[in-house]
Structure formats: C-alpha cells, structure tokens
Image (tube, rainbow, N blue to C red; front, side, top):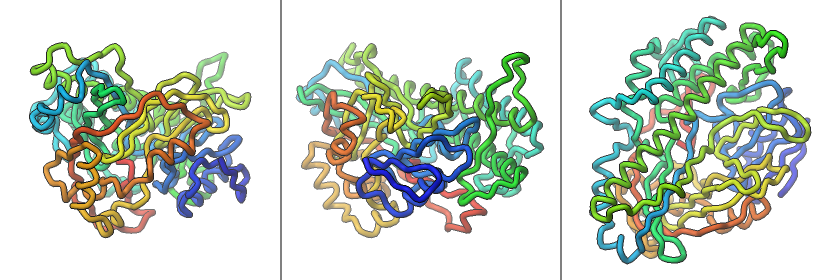
Length: 449
C-alpha cells in the first residue's frame, strides 16, 4: 500500500500503477470537507465519474450518490454445482445458448413484466423516497441522465415501476456477464455480474441533481460535479426528526439506495435461478443453493471506523471484513477468485471488485485484435457467447489488468479460497455511445457499467 499526500487527507492506494486521472480524483475526494480519516483506492482502481472506480470513501454526516455509483448495488453472485468439468463440457454450448435466449442483455428487457409483490414493494418504496425528496428540495424528477433535469421527461411512478418490472432478471451490458467456471478440483460453478439496471440509474441521477443543488445552496465549490453530496446527520435521539429539508433529502436517498440495493440482489438471484433451471433440465438437483454468495460492490453503509460512525461508500469495491466472502472476477480469459476478507482497517475493511481496466473501452477497440483475444480465451478453456463478438471487443482479456497481480497487491486485504478458470461466458453488447459533450452538462457512462 502506498500513501499519497497533496490533499487535506491522505490517499491509501493498493494500485501500484494508479493512473493520473484516478489519483487526481482520489485527491479531490480527500479534499472534501466531509471526508473522514483517509481515502482508500483498491488494487483495481481506475478513473470513474468524480470518484474513482475502486475507491472507498468515508463521509461524516453525508452521503454521495456518485460515490456509490450509477449502477446501485452492482455486484457478483456465485453458486456451486455438483457437476464436474467433464460432465458440463459436452452440454456447455447448449446450456449457454439457452441462457442467452432466456436472459435478456444489453438494452433488452423481458417482453412481459414480472409481477412480484416483493419487487413491486421495492420499486414503490424507491419512488416514494424520490417523490418525498423532490417535494422537500423543489427539484423536479426527470428521466434525464444529465445534470440538467430539463433534458429528459418528467419521471412518473408508473413508468419507474414498469421499467423495474421488465428489467428484473436481466443482465445489462458493459462488463456484466454470466459465466460457467471450473474450480481446482474440476468442480463447476455459475457466476454472474449485474446490478440494478435502469432503476439504480434513475435513483442516482435524480439524487445527484439534488446533491448538486444542495452544494450550490451552501456555496460549496466542487472540483468535479461527481463529488456532490447530501447531508445525512444522525437523527435527533429525543425527537427522531431528520432535521431540515435537506437532511430529509439525504435520508430519502438512503431509503431509495436501500431499495435499489435489494432490487439488484433480487435481479442477480432471479438470473441465477434461471440458469439453475436450465442446467437442472439436464442434470437434476445440480445446484448447491446453500452455498450461494450474492454481494454488492456499489453501496454505502453506516459503519464504525477509527472510532467514528461514518458513511462508507464502496464504489467498485467489496466489503472484506474479517471472514466475509468476497468475489474478484478477472476476465473471460483469466478466471476469477473466491476469497475471504481479512478486515484490514486501512482499507476500511474492503478489497477490489475485479481486475480493473488497463485500457479504456475506446483504446481497447482501437488496440486489441479480436481473433487474438478469442484465441487467448480458447487457450484458457473458455468460450464467448454474445450476439456479436465484435461488439464485446472492449471486454476482452487485453482490456484488463492481470488478475493474479491484483490479488498479490491486495494480499493484506483478502485471502484466496478458490481460483476458477472460465468455461463459457455470456455477455450482452453495449448500445452505441452518444457523442461526448461537456462533462458538466451531461452524464458520462462509467467503465463499471
């Protein structure tokens, strides 16, 4: 771990090659008046929007939408099967083909909405929080992805709920995937990476605009709009009151965040169940559900660190308190790790959420050779399943850091339990990107999505 100065608080980095942009963002985080003790950057840290991906930021009496990230509750889920590599390989192509036909990815959604009382309750709870916050601070709800709400349409409950119903149990695009893995004993596991889809994005974007309004209201100058935060003081112990209107907005974001996190967890579980059903058509009772792990790496929780109660934001970072299971994926050609947290206080008991990008998506498309990358995946024992392999060139192994180096760099944060190699990976293709505009005027997609 290296310590960087140059801000009111130090930055602790486990990334030996932390890029200049990510370091600058981390130092900006360490300059926030509500930041506490230090900022931690994990071994896979790289530049994001405002806050680096792979950053852990502790705030005192405050919460920041983009320190959580646009994809609230993005995370990993993994479940072992009772199958061997030799048993699944003859069925791999059929299995992954059925998975790709059964689970929408990219911009696609289910044709028929899911009517589940649990999902509906979460969606309505999130919208209740959005609505109450909007009334408290007089910032209108919008579908806009920009810092300007007038660039979109008014966000209404029916549309918000309808979107959540058709997207639950869907994969998304970017670095999201579903994978068959083999362990060191030729044991077979199912793993996936996904989050809250459009639900989390709408929560984040609307509360981000409110956070910007709060900072403007208080005369707080921000180095980057992605650093905006909302006040979240402790409730009055005598009255239970949240305080002024802006504190109520902060509390509303906390409420919407919790709903978004739960939605993301249900989203992953539904997809695992779908994959499990496909596998068990051919191999009855193959999934060992009692050993499933389902965790977030985009969240914020109130925790005690260095003697203070702080809002610990993990953006592309995994909670790794002592004994806690962790998942660290690499790429389609390198495999993944199941680990166990060591509870290192200097990292706010966290670890990396993956290998981390070494090339931006644009650079990967320009510099990588598709056939060479596919050959590397085949040599590792894997196979890519996607509507267009060309469209996922920016997700090939050459776009990522070396996973074993990342694990070595965070050996004081997490211990290895099991290393996996890929057998088959299903990925959704990204939609075409809009032309980039001024950063302060429009939302920019993050590499984690």
